[in-house]
Length: 183
Image 1 (cartoon, rainbow, N blue to C red):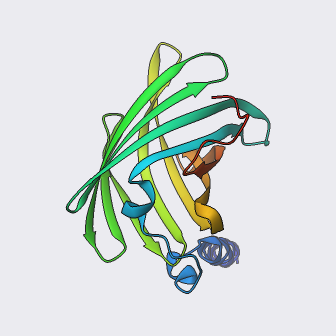
Image 2 (cartoon, one colour):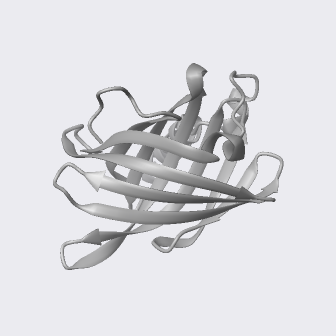
Image 3 (cartoon, rainbow, N blue to C red):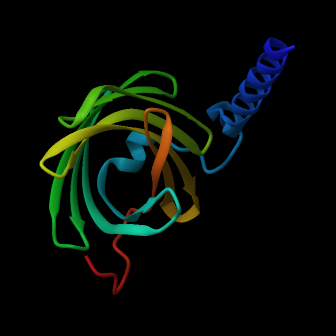
């Protein structure tokens, strides 16, 4: 009887977690259609924040992004400025490997990032070597980006460690700086 209880509980957990995963194909017909390379070519600006797992905002930041397209590769030079004055730079090298499929590399990304897009959505997954105290930790990012009208893109990323959510990053991108916005 005890084995049956555990088996039933395991099946229920697997069903619930299986149902909770979004699939990029669900957005295939959503407009405006996202062309990742066309969107990020040139200058892009972003504003965002990191929340802990309870939703408390721990850090805010802005990002200036310069994008260069060369054939099937997009290079993004991202320059972060955090609300405490810290500056960071990340340079992504993103390669289109098929229709709506991408791989990416950056110096602080462990291995390769995997991306897939359809319609107005992009799902981008990677492990980041994140500075922490006097060392660093590896955390997993599950990014979802959605293109909206007027070339604004919203991004929500779940950050996890050992499969447990530790926080979330929320940001939005614009192709032009906002009037009066602090940079």
